[in-house]
Amino acid sequence: MARIEVKSEITGTVWQVKAKPGEKVESGDTLIVIESMKMEIPVITEDPGTVKEIRVKEKDAVAEGQVVAVLDG
Image (cartoon, rainbow, N blue to C red):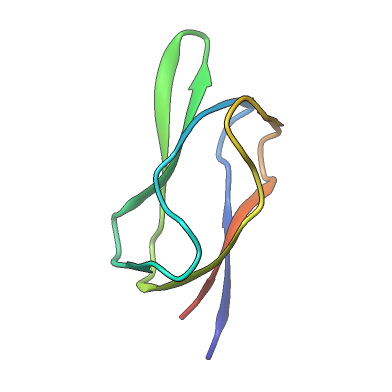
């Protein structure tokens, strides 16, 4: 299985974690929602797979390019 790292495209604060380890996801599914400048920005997976790890929790600060989730593809 391929290891897929899902990264944040923006700097902000984790508003909501929508996926959990063990969950199967498809391309285009929202894993996490980040709040930045009063806007809610979804972190979407480009590849299908199984969520192996969520590396953030609600209210965590995240940086652009930070790995926020890992999938097994």
